[in-house]
Amino acid sequence: MTDETRTHEAHGAEGRTPSDFTDDGGQAPEFSRPDFLPADEAASSHDGRPRDDGWSQLGEPPGQGRWGQAGQQGGIGQSGESGWGDPSGRARQDTAVFAAPAGPPPPPSQAFGMGPGWAPPPGAFGSVVAAPRRGPRTGTLVALAVVIALLASTLGSVGTYLLTRPSVSGRDPSFSLGKAPSGTNSRPPDSIAGVAAKVLPSVVSLAVDGGTSASTGSGFLIKGGYVVTNNHVVAAAAPGGEIQIQFNNRKSTAARIVGRDPESDLAVVKPDETFGAPEISLGNSDNVVVGDPVVAIGSPLGLVGTVTSGIVSSLNRPVQAGEENSSDTTWLSAIQTDAAINPGNSGGPLVNANGEVIGVNSAIATLGRSAGGQSGSIGLGFAIPVNHARRIAEELVTTGVAKKSRIGITIDQSYQGAGVRIDSEVKQGTRPIEPNGPADKAGLKPGDIILEVNGTVVQDSTELIALIRNKAPGEKLVLKFQRGGQEKTATVIVGAAAVQPTPQPS
Image 1 (cartoon, rainbow, N blue to C red):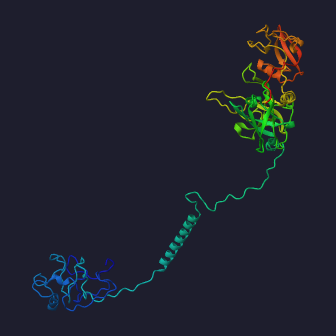
Image 2 (image 1 turned 45 degrees about the horizontal axis):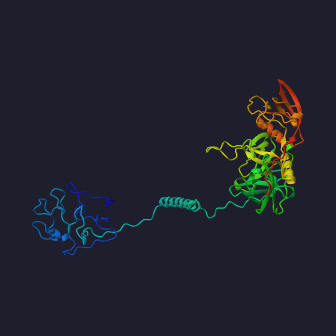
Image 3 (image 1 turned 90 degrees about the horizontal axis):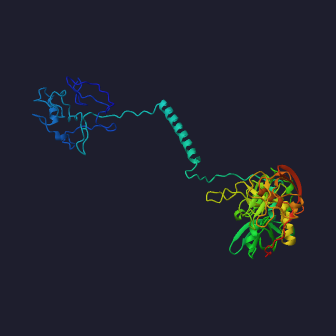
C-alpha cells in the first residue's frame, strides 16, 4: 500500500522489494499492514505441500531442490551459482540478495494477478492485525454540520422558488384580479353620458329601399309622432319605395313620406308606430355660440345609437351640397362642428348640453373622392340650424311643401372682386332684378355689389344664397352694397319663390 512506512533498508542493494529482506537477527520482520494482503485477512502458515496458487509454477532454483529445502541449508550464496536471486526475474545485481526465509518466496515487487486463484503466498509475512478504526474528529463533525446546514438552506430556497415561480406557459391557477370596485352608472344630466341617455330614446335609424337604389340614415322624433330627417336619406323612396324605421328599443316599423324639401335637404316621415318613444326637445339655434359643447347622435354606417361629441366650430358656414342648378342642390348656412359625423349620421340631431336639438346633421367635408381621399369624418361636419328646420318641418306637415326664400336677383358668376355683384344685363330671358320683387322694392339696381348681409361680410355667391335661404319669408335683411364707388345700405324683406310642383308623398 502507498501509505506504509518502511523501517528497514536493503543491505548493499540498489533497490528493494516490499518484503524480500531479513533483519540483523536473520528473522523476517513482521509488518502490521503488508503490501499485498488485505487488512482484514490473516496469513496462513505454509505446510510444504505444492500449491495451486501460481507460485509453484516458478520452478526450483538452479542447482537446488524446492524453495523450502534451500531454507534448511542456511542461506543463498552471493555468486549466483549456489543461491536464488530476485524471483521477479530481474538480472543479477538488480537488488540485494538475502537468505531465503522459511517457506515460499515472497512475490515480486510489482506483481500482477496471474489467474483467478492468485493471491499473495500465505504465511510469508505472518499474521496481520487490522488497525483499530477511529471515529471522525470534532472539527470534521462541525464542518460536516455546517455543510449540511448550508445544503438544507439551499435546497429550501430552491424548493420555494420552484413552488412559487411562474409557469413557463404563463398560466397560474391561483391568479386573481379581485372584484370590480363598487360604483354607479348614474351620470350628471349635463354630462355627455347624461345628454346621451336623455336623447337616445328619441333618435331613430332609417333604412330606405327604392328598388334601384337604397340608403340609410338617421332621424329624430318630434311632436305628433313625426320624424325629421334629411331629404337625401328618403329621396329614393319618393317614387313609391319602402322605409323602415328602427327605434332605440330595437323595435321596427314602416313609415311613409309626409313631405320633403330638396332645397333645404329636409324631409318629414310618419312611422306607423312609435312604441312609446319620447319626442325630442327643440332648442334655439340663434343662441348658439362658437365653442359650445355639442353631441351628435345617429347611425353611422348602420351602427345604431352611436354617440360622438365635440364643439361648435363655426356659425353661418356656407355649404353647397349637390350639383349647382339641379333640383336637389342645397345651400346651407350651417353650424360647423368637429363632432364626428359619418355617412349614416345624416338626419340625426346635433344637441347642446341640455339635450336640445340645435341642428340637423346633414353634410361633411372630405379630402376628395379619389382612391386616396378620406370619405369619412375629418372633423368637419355641418348641421342645418334647428330654427330653419323647425320652419320647414311645420310647412311640410301642414302643406306638404316648404316655401323657398328669395330676394329676386340674378348673380353675376363671372365677377371676381370683393362681394357679390348683381347681373347688369338680361341673360336667357331673365332680368337681373325681378320686377316688383324684394330687391326691386328695396331700391337695388343691376350692377350693384352686395358687400354685407346683417353685418356679415359676403365673400362669394354661395354664402349670399345660403344666408338668404336660411331666413324665412317675411324676415328682414340689412344689405350694404356699393354702387358707382359709393357704399349704400338697403333693407330687404325676404320673399318666397313661386311654388313648384313636387312629387306627392307616398
